[in-house]
Image (cartoon, rainbow, N blue to C red):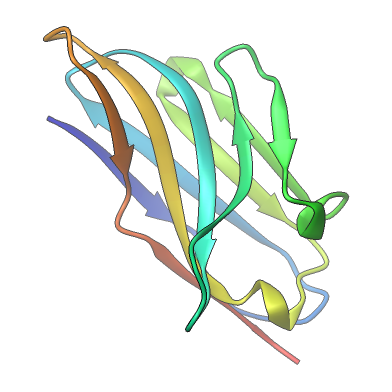
Length: 120
C-alpha cells in the first residue's frame, strides 16, 4: 500500500499565499513524477504543476509565475507554494504520484484532496 497525505489548504484572501504539502508513505521503492491537480465545483480535474524525480517542472499557464512546485526526494514529499492567489484558484487540490513499489508494482496514487478557498 502507498498513501499520499496532503495538508496546507485553507481560506485566504485574494493576493495572499498558501503552501501545500504532500507526503508519500508505504511500500515505496522510488517515486517518479509527482504533481498537483485541482478540481473546482462543476469543472473537470486539471493539472496545476508537476515535477520529475530529477526536478524538471511543468505548470499550467494559469499559474505560471505565481505557483512553484518543489520536492524533497529523501522525504518523499512534494510542495506547492501558491502566491498572489486569485478567486479562480479556489478548488480542491489533489496530490498525485507515480510510484515504484517494493513489491514490483508501478502505481499511480492520489491523495484525498485539500480545499483551497480564495475570497475576493
